[in-house]
Amino acid sequence: MYNLKICTNFAAAHNLINYDGDCENLHGHNWKVEVTVKAKELDNSGLGIDFKILKGKTKELLGTLDHKYLNELEPFIENSPSSENISRYLFEKLETILNSDNVTVQEVNVWESDNACASYSRD
Image 1 (spheres, one colour):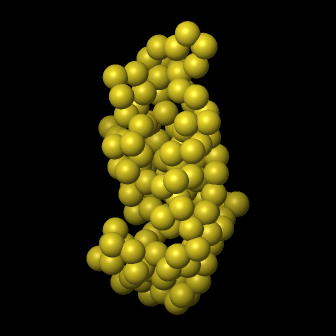
Image 2 (cartoon, rainbow, N blue to C red):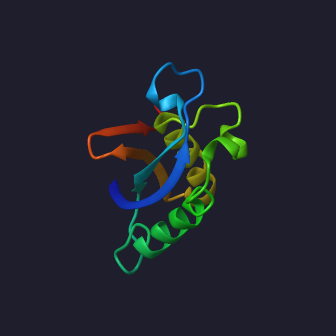
């Protein structure tokens, strides 16, 4: 198996729902997003998946979150837009976009700061 990872980012505002603390107030982050995929085989060029495709599809998805108030977006109206829920949302969306017979999304990490990250993966 081959593991490939890209790193990208987006900026957005949110506030946590049902949270007692400062983060219940409106605030923003410059989130760093890491996407790891697994490829079974390499193509004729020696690639599991072209990084250009992986980056492009991820950036396209992040464009739906970038510079938005996440609490107003459909996936987070009833689910607090925590880093945990954002990582799961991105993972599930990327699965539908990227998964094939050869490539599967393995993990999505969402960093809300240099020191705090949430990850989502399937068992």
